[in-house]
Image (cartoon, rainbow, N blue to C red; front, top):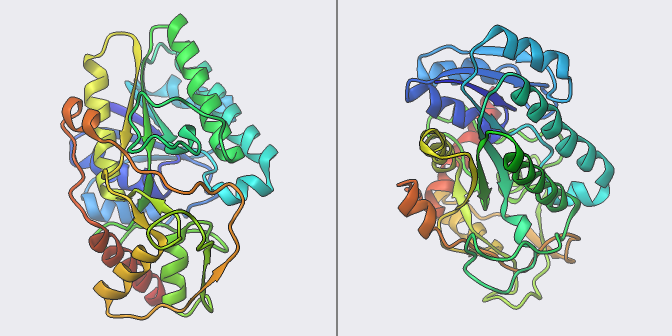
Amino acid sequence: MKILVTGGLGYIGSHTVVELLSEGHEVIVIDNLNNSKIEVRGKIEDISNKSFELVIGDVNDSKVLNDIFESNEIEGVIHFAAHKAVGESVDHPVMYYHNNISGLISLLGVMDKYKVSNLIFSSSCTVYGATQDLPVTEKNDIQLAESPYGTSKIICEEIIQDFTRHKPMKSILLRYFNPVGAHPSALIGELPLGVPNNLVPFITQTAAGIRKELTVFGDDYDTVDGTCIRDYIHVVDLAKAHVKALDYSVSMNNSVDVFNVGTGKGNTVLEVIQAFDKVNNLSLPYKIGPRRGGDIEQIWADTTKVNDVLGWTASYGIEDMMKHAWKWQQSLSQD
């Protein structure tokens, strides 16, 4: 299939492009380079030993999208292009609403015009809010989000649900839990521009001496060690889930389906730090700070549906994730 990947040079997007190319798909990437670098293209091609078309542009620019669809027989779209940091969204809510929601609307308009029906949407477990019903299944209620990022994902999901009711669309919403790690080759990985908003890049940058110490936001939660619990998933496993979802979408009737994508196991922040120290033989400097706005106490996935319907399971554990994340950080230090 010929697949358009929006945000395909970003963290999850780049790993997904590798998997798509490896499975024989033809790929076109659109990326505005706001949170990625052009050099990632060559790294993807080095890993896959295959090339792909790259368009530097923004999904909010309907002319750029029209040109892509006019020039290519696009058969499916995987939509990553969005801002994605919970903490940043609390500080800059309007930026998140505008970018994440209007980008999707622009994309759907062009997909409708060119009769492209297969859509894989990058959603998030943040749509479940501060749920107490754990582990989280796809039947859990969508709750009031704890951050503008989460709100933007809920609205985007509602738009896709509504759009699919009225148009011939086969849409899959993948609700990610917490993607971490890097490609085992250390050629691609998470590349935050500026101060990281997510835990693992802050861990690796602290270990590399770029940051003085890591701040753990709160140790007074009702968890085993007082720190937040998340379901961390290796980015390569997550990328493979997109390929499985794409394959499944082809056989769907016009409808929307939803899948949680995680490991089904939660780890506290301190457990992640301990796993990083253990597998890399390091001792990370950290301090306990106050709670951070927008963070929920604990969440992890029930992965029964994605395992059974898509035939996908996570293959990497938390120590693999920390090993590959550190290998990636070390490769950056050598560049």
